[in-house]
Length: 396
Image (cartoon, rainbow, N blue to C red; front, side, top):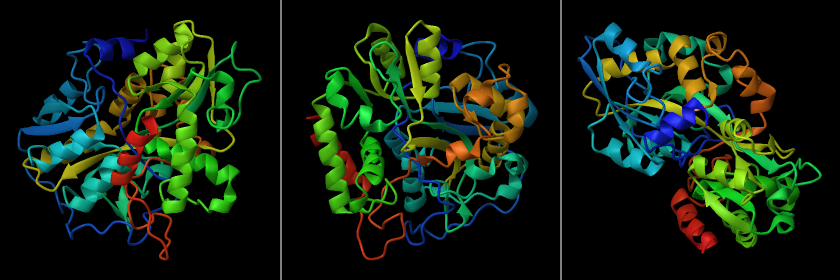
């Protein structure tokens, strides 16, 4: 088991983020989200000696899980801001915790970020107060899940693509299409696996976008009722072939090692670890493209320690810290300068950190809203709450 997974498993963590992001569009569709008129902080003041964070497991390591893995202590020594971290297991939990007003910043995924923006629980950020923002990959700036009408609401942390992983001895020829888990899933009945989240409906929508163009799907997170129903129907058909839905990637690794799963959605870090542990697996970004995720550090509109929060945002995307967290967690860093500082000099190549053509094929998770994210004015799209309801029906 890799150091990352071993440490996080020992901590009782690493549930994948029930997250979301958007297609590769450059900014939020006008009117898709109508947030309160909040203003970003104008300048930094005296630090408040503490900062309260909500984070995914592995994002704010202080040496308690592994003495060699610590980017919190250097921050505390440099700024005088003591870091208090609440590890969250889901985006829903992050949204609920942010509403309490007890936290200053959160590492929100796309389904959480738009909800936090719309509710006014997160405020716009002043990127001038985050000097390291200038080195963030352009492909992560001003995107649907971290901005509204060109106004940034957070600092990009990292990103990853959802890949098609398969057992090289059981799945032949090597697949290059998501048809392996949809139209052709019956070939491996009972051994197909899928990500356990309502946002997985977007994977079906992405497949239909390419294979049933008559539906007119332009964005897998902007589905009118007809498009949504078609996606749900596809997933209900797939359900008959599913052996297991997964959210804990330690369990997915175990399933591929044992042969209980032979094909399904995965992450690069899962592939790497499964291969390290002897599983006969490979993974591919299919020809249809894929869904994916990018997390964003956002500041609470009720932050009691806003100056320390901004100091943290700048620290966590600094080349040094961003390199450490990206390598430890298993993702592509957001800071371009981080790539020279990873212990594994092939890390950024493996995770396609600076391969923008690769990321143009990825439709990052984004919260579905009733106002269509693809810009349509003559249609109503199905909001995320109904995706949650439909997911229960799909699995039943």
